[in-house]
Image 1: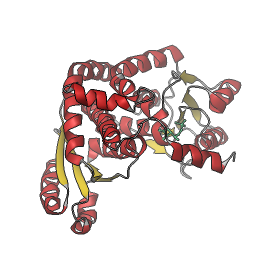
Image 2: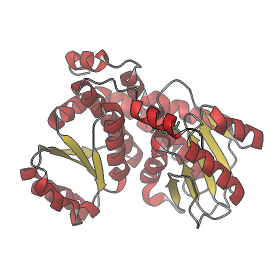
Image 3: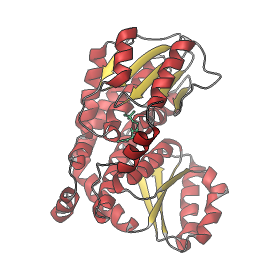
Image 4: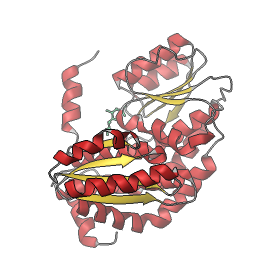
Amino acid sequence: MADSTETADLRALDSEGMLDTVLALPDHLRDALWRIESARLKPMPDSSAAIVCGMGGSAIGGDLAAAAIGDQLTKELLTVRGYELPSWAPAGAAVLCSSYSGNTEETLACYAAAEALGAGRVVATTGGQLADSARADGVPVVGLPSGMPPRAAVGYMFCVAAELASLAEASLPIRTEIDAAASHLENRSEDIQARAAEIAGLIGDAVPVFYGAGLTSPVAYRWKTQVNENGKQPAFSSPLPEASHNEIAGWEGSRRRLACVLLSDVDQHPREARRFEVNGDLIEPHAAAVIRVKAEGVTRTTRLLELVMLGDLVSLHLAARHGVDPSPIEAIDALKARLGAP
Ligand code: F6R
């Protein structure tokens, strides 16, 4: 960490070691590859689509994998967040049901729906009802290490979703890229930590709005959800170019209470790159800050994962700044308790 005072601040309220878990992303990626290998999953080459079912921290891996694979995808890789598979879901789909706890009701409902559809199923979980059902049904399970908040298992969820794409022959495997990205993140860790402190300082007490496009679109959503859950503060995200056709007009009423964070990529469509520039310029007079972050690195996987780690660290800095412990998510726990069993 570039500044030891910053580290001490981050650790002061971090009751469950979230900082160390975020910094362990390279290890998580390597461990995930090993666990996937050990699960000896069978190819599902006849699958017409690959579908990742999950919620929150267990769903984002699907979006991130689709973004990392990008135009190398030859079939749909879709993330479903909810109780049902899409009405068009083909019987021959390959379905990954991903739930860190194994007890998320929406994911359990999709697991049952996938069986009814006759889909090929795979499960990623630490246990719970999902693991019990999968074992009873003979569905292969990628076992995840327990003991972390689900959202901190992003590296695992990303790797399993990417593996689903390869099992369904929706893409070539990206295991080598993931392994290289892990080494890259390890080498860049200090710089990423320093940049995270800087970005959080620029956001300050404003409500952040994260923009991404293409590769960075699900990353912007990840940053938003991490600021929500770790920082316990409102945050929003929008994809470009769409936001430049509507949301940009709303900044006029922001009265400098919102901070605009533009997450671009070195290998962006040139018109998207131009839109990042112009949107930022036009938002500037109305924003508390306009912060431009560009993903660098050789592969899409490396750039994506570096931005994920950066955003996770930004959220921890914002948590420290607002005097909150990043790990507990009382609102989500209260909501689940109040809903009760379905
Ligand atoms: C908590 C978190 C949540 C959970 C979500 C689904 O850290 O990130 O978004 O991921 O409530 O729970 P699981 O992941 O157990 O299926």
